[in-house]
Length: 99
Image 1 (cartoon, helix red, strand yellow):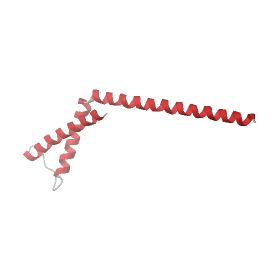
Image 2 (cartoon, rainbow, N blue to C red):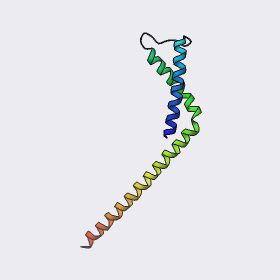
Image 3 (cartoon, rainbow, N blue to C red):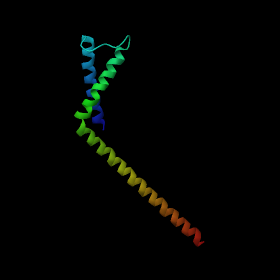
Image 4 (tube, one colour):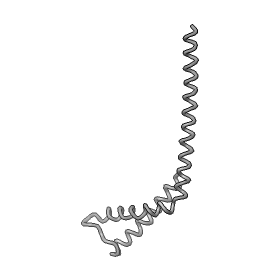
């Protein structure tokens, strides 16, 4: 998961550098007034999103498998804990009725 995040951040930083170069060289339009920094960030985000979606497909699939395994483990632990509580409750009720 950390690897995917770092790769996505790397793509964004690369796009940020390219967009910054294009804006300051005059190839891409500048923002209005003092919004130039925000314009560069937003444009870099818009460009990096589809690149990340296509280029990091395998890594995203690996990360989602890791998350799914963790969720399954947590569900199994929760179910086991709930089963132990149910058994203890049943024993306590049986002892209370026997007295």
